[in-house]
Amino acid sequence: MDFNFSDEQQLLADTVQRFVRDNYSFEARRAILQGKGGWSRDMWQEIAGLGLTAINVPEEHGGLGNGPVETMLVMNALGEGLVVEPFLAAAVIAPVFLTRIGDKAAAEQLLPNIASGERIVILAHQEPQTRGEIDHVATRAEKSSGGYVLDGLKNVIIGGGAADELLISARTSGRTGDTDGISVFRVDPKAAGVTLKDYGTIDGLRAADIELKKVTVPASALVGAEGKAFAAIEAAYDHALSALCAEAVGIMKAVNATTLDYTKNRKQFGQPIAKFQVLQHRMADMFLHSEQAKSMSYLAAIKCVDPEAGERRRALSAAKVIVGQAGRFVGQQAVQLHGGMGMTEELMVSHYFKRLTAIELTLGDADFHTQQFIATGAN
Image (tube, rainbow, N blue to C red; front, side, top):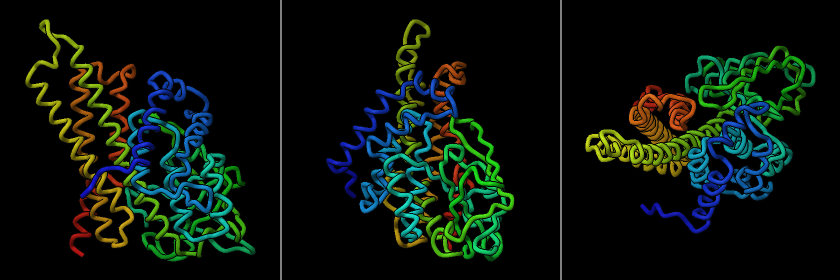
């Protein structure tokens, strides 16, 4: 299979890498984390200015009409810089969902503003005890005169606090765990009955718990057909799994480079520790794990739009497992090779390790996806 990128794709990768290198140093990232909200709206506008927020938006709505491979290249570069702005949630999950749900009015109203970076739209789907199961929806939406009333709890919604508008999944029929009966509604984060608790996560990102108590929305807030949102949500999260794998690969690349540089400069017994054969072997193993993860991230990018559901599910689950295991190995080895300094806030390697750990747990951990892989193979 040809893994060479087109000239346009390579230009995109080079542009984003240069942007991250020039604008997202360790000191700049620290300043953003310590600023208001823990992320930068100005930085988001610069990201949008490069056209990155338009990658997953169709051309007819002001986007670039690209796909998972271009998203992979962007996530590689953003991973190297540990960019904390909500790109995955706002520029991957939300536009893919809105494109797949087939609601012309919602697409025309939201996608152009998503593409330009003027509006951050977040899909709030995850709930307590979800553990990677995207059909687990307990939040309810009951019909009322002229609209719906929403009750439920969404938790650990990455970028939720940054949202100008929320897309809330809720069950209009069926039982928790059914794929049928899931609907999505446009909700103002400041609407009556919405309580949003924003907080920082261990990896430097921001997440929110969103409680809905008798939240009334008009019938026009429904996105797509009632009870038929699962397929679009699944498509959005399949893209997100691929993007997460790509981000982890970018982080591992940076970890390997940082560790190699450190071992070349750290001296013991009068010589750089990079000359010790046992440490060379460990760094070689780190590189091999990273290369295997890169290959699996390519597979995930190719297969995340495969129309054959079983093939798609197996490829994505396999990629998530291999990338997660590789990230854990590379992160642990890097911390050990840096000695006690590897766990301090002053070194970037500790922040890389935290993000790799969070990625391994996001959208289903290795155990969950191993079971998914087994289950799809049995069908």
